[in-house]
Length: 329
Image 1 (cartoon, rainbow, N blue to C red):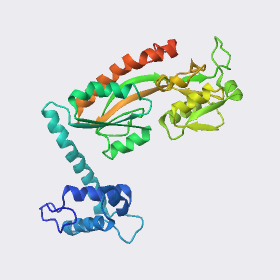
Image 2 (image 1 turned 45 degrees about the horizontal axis):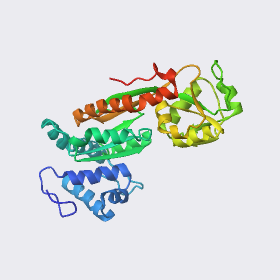
Image 3 (image 1 turned 90 degrees about the vertical axis):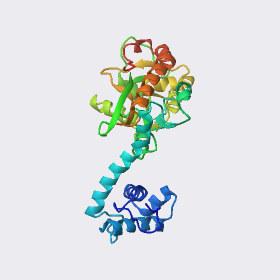
Image 4 (image 1 turned 30 degrees about the horizontal axis):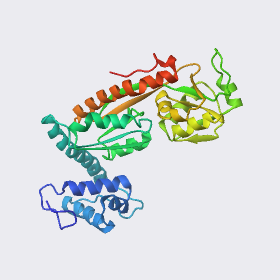
């Protein structure tokens, strides 16, 4: 097979994997220029690749009279077929390594930001003997999902189970309740707080609406028919906890998020969420048939880290959390 941009393709298929990759990226990114930037190529080079595909396959793939990019019926078919072929090709090396019974030489993991230290150092310590290279990046759930779909991560640990995705394997490692964090100015009582009364006294500092935490909290408040004015929202648990500790607001988060920001809690305190409980799940997601053994080991290791390094701190913050936190088996 000839290299990209180096003359017509002469194999019997009329395409090669690199050409399909350029075509699929063009479809995903919406333009040849954007695909070229991702591939480290020039826009004319990508255009030449797609013209070469059209010539070798004998069909038009792109309607060049339309802006932005519009695929022909043949182009739509090739995009779907190419995505499947490329996904299968991506799996071949890891499948071969799994057949040999070993870990891949490198592993790319994306995880939610609430899994900071000591999770990552303990993960490295556990997996280090089996891996040559481990790359770990943190982000919001929607960012992790998009990067996983774009093959930037091999495995993600996320609070979005992505139930709509096919061809993936899920391992739930933690189920934890949403709880309240209130400043010391809120009087202690044996009775449950009334959120309506609390919100008339103090502002609710929210998670960003684009975060999974924020979406789940807003959905629950709507179910309870509680309307609270939206004034402040942030992506960081450190920021939320710090604002509550300063006596400026109250917040809804999870024990794991709170433990991650415990140094900022000060004299603020954690309370059970009043009324019906609702929960967040952390799930390990990998591609079916790819790194299955690795994902299983990662799930086992993650539960062990959470049980030994996080659970005691969670129970110190809220002793009443004992029967509400589940480290799924």
